[in-house]
Amino acid sequence: MTYTTFIEPAATANSNQPNQFEHLMNQMGVRVSFARDEEIYVQEEKADLIYRVVRGTVRTTRLMSDGRRQVGDFYYEGEIFGVEAGDEHLFSAEALSDCLIQAIKLSALRDSTDGHLERLMGRAANRELLRAHEHVLLLGRKNACERVATFLMSAAGRCKSERVELPMGRQDMADYLGLTIETVSRMLTQLQASALVEFGGLRDFRVKNQTAMARLAA
Amino acid sequence: MTYTTFIEPAATANSNQPNQFEHLMNQMGVRVSFARDEEIYVQEEKADLIYRVVRGTVRTTRLMSDGRRQVGDFYYEGEIFGVEAGDEHLFSAEALSDCLIQAIKLSALRDSTDGHLERLMGRAANRELLRAHEHVLLLGRKNACERVATFLMSAAGRCKSERVELPMGRQDMADYLGLTIETVSRMLTQLQASALVEFGGLRDFRVKNQTAMARLAA
DNA sequence: CGGGGCCTTGATGCTGTTCAAATAGAGTGG
DNA sequence: CCACTCTATTTGAACAGCATCAAGGCCCCG
Image (tube, rainbow over all chains, first blue to last red; front, side, top):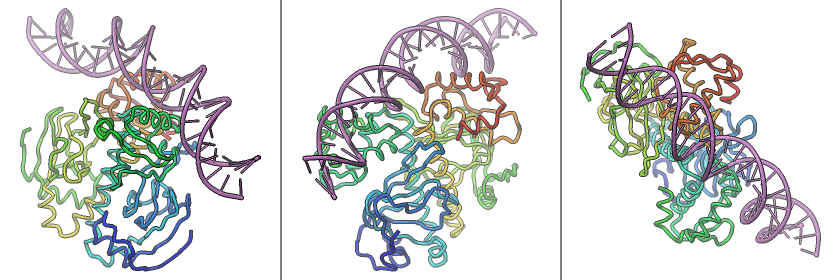
């Protein structure tokens, strides 16, 4: 883990999140960069910080004692993560690619923002909850093809351009979708064969049949 | 839906939740009773209330357009639900048995509790998040037997007595666990055959081998 | 040009689903 | 309290979908 800058003024004006929060984080946060696959925090660590992705992508993962892995979610530029905690983190967070992360101490925020903090944290927690519930539906009641389609559509939704870039590898997708890497691969080939999507490279695709994809993603 | 009492003082001193919240709800809440299978709120309804179970049990469910159903969670006496909302409810809530529910308008709370509310709501949201994440792990990476065992252990955890009462039927369990009713039934028979649990009636059991069950539930 | 990760593809098997039927419980009226 | 009915649950047999195991191909990079 490499410290780059402390209390650096914001360079990006990304507004996926409430500006108020962003402002606070820029004022009081610490910017830290992480290399690919570095851990930002680990499962069962005490949770005293919350984080915002400035550049790069982050995944949260949870490991069972026998090695089975579940990916909790992926966080893109501008998104906030690390809120999932009761007292200690249930998940670990890792840099998917080289990342710049802004972190802020909860206790610091709490002292200096009388009330605003709770509202903002509440909103962040709510967003998390929404995503978790979508995830539950996906894992509980969708088949392999629908899961992969849902995943692609959600990735596409975060991109304004037609060409969508996937920041994660197949294993990460599989562990998010509750499938194996082979099944994910097969479904991707199948979706492509049916001309619903088209892959440029391994990690870059385009939705060809919006309607059909949306239907699959339900 | 039958209105029973408005602003009735609390009869139960159940303290699964912060007392402060309970106190507020008792002061300002409305008590409403629901018959078995009645809807408390429905998917996509605007979310302006939060709820607390006074007596009975509640399930939240989500329906896909083609009828597949996912149960979000079960809420027992003293627990708070209805927090899962962004703006409108993602789930419906239904009375599993005849229920007494205390409801309170968020806007009312907000005006009269300057700041406390946000903290309390945040805590409730966090609990929800924790449960959702456990649910994700269960659905994503556990097999049928482990899912059922996890479920039974969690039910057992809410009971102080050795004898555990299940307030829901097999279909609800199945829809929570992402399985079919037949698989749930088979796993129950199997767990019983291996002498890990013992069923008295259909909805009442006892954990016979704590260690083995805990291992399965991971 | 060669090595090492990823990713894809193929063959086979297991786990959980589906469909069908039997059984057990719960509720109702005699 | 018992007989009857209706529903919930269990059980069985066949099937399907996804996992597993094992190669093979591709791509990045030295």
